[in-house]
Image (cartoon, rainbow, N blue to C red; front, side):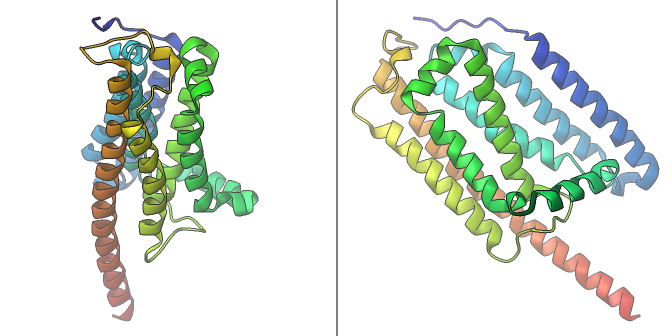
Length: 266
């Protein structure tokens, strides 16, 4: 059986991406005018737009159709919405771009109290990943459009919350320091990676939605196992790259802080 390679062109997705892209473009130009390259440079623009492109690939391109026919494609779609797109969208932001919303975000953080703690990001991310891979919910998402949309929104929301705590350009009141980011990522990626390992090596087919599908020469069970391997491998790679990035950023911030202290002493 060959994969259906048609595009969905969902009006809601196209309108949302166009709206976010337009809002970001307006703030990017304002930040450039206000602070020059320090406020926003071409790299930030490219990174943010790349995040929007990944959203389109996940929800509008043939990948969306493939996810209804193959577990591995559905897994790639989930990981793009929960990891890759949120990472790029958050990295595309700067303090100057976010300046109009900074005070509002600070008020929301104070009002949220314990709910603004990074632990909630871990709980939300891990919970969403495990919840939507419960067979009943997984099959329901493939058979019901409303449930499928809810699934995509929950993956994107949990992903943005999770990566915001790690990569946000705004210094949060509960920002993690020291080994905090390492523990934050390790706890999450190990728990989700374990789910991938379970799917990769389970000897029985879990999801009935794919029971009668045979795509690209893979049996339904082999398709499910490949999906699990994709999840486990992606979680390991993303954790490694993110930790390396955070280490470099920590060194950069430390050097900048030393320069500020030196200027103050002078």
